Length: 207
Image 1 (cartoon, rainbow, N blue to C red):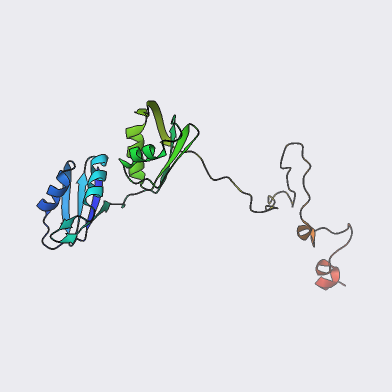
Image 2 (cartoon, rainbow, N blue to C red):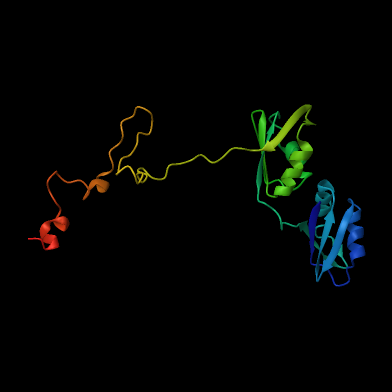
C-alpha cells in the first residue's frame, strides 16, 4: 500500500472528487481530507507513481494541487545493485526503475549497474518487482548493494590499548612493533633509579 500526500487543496474540494481523480490510475483503499490537504492510499506502487506524476499541479477548482508520496515512514535512500545488464542502456534502465518511484542516479559499470532511489519503500517494491525479470533480452537480478565507503585511517597513532602500557602491537604478523611518538614518551620513561621532581622525597616533605 502507498500513502500519497495531496496538498494545497481548495475549499471546494471533496473526498469524492479526489477519489475520482486517483481512481483513474488504480484502486483507492482510503481517502481522507484534513483541513487543506488530504491523504490517499493506493494498493499498487506502479499505479501510485503514475498518479503522482500525472496529478501533480493538476488544476482543481482553479488551484494547482501538490501531489507527492508521503515520506512519513521512509527509512532513507537505497542503493540497488543490478546484475547482468549491458553498457549503453542507462536511460532504459532508469525508465524501468522509475515505474516504481524516484531515481536519483543510474549508472551501468561493465555488466552490472547501480541505481539510487531516495525512498526505501519504492526501492523495495522495485527490487521485488524487477528481480529475475527480462531486460534487454537478459534476465537481471536486483538486490541491495553491499558496497561501503572505503575506510580511511584518520590518526597516524591510534590510542594504545589501556592494558598494554603504551605498547603498539604489530600492524601485520611478523612486523616489529612501532615505537610510540616522542610526545607520548616524554615525561613517562626515565633512567632507572631516578625520580622526577614531582615524585622526589623533597616534593613530599620527606627530607
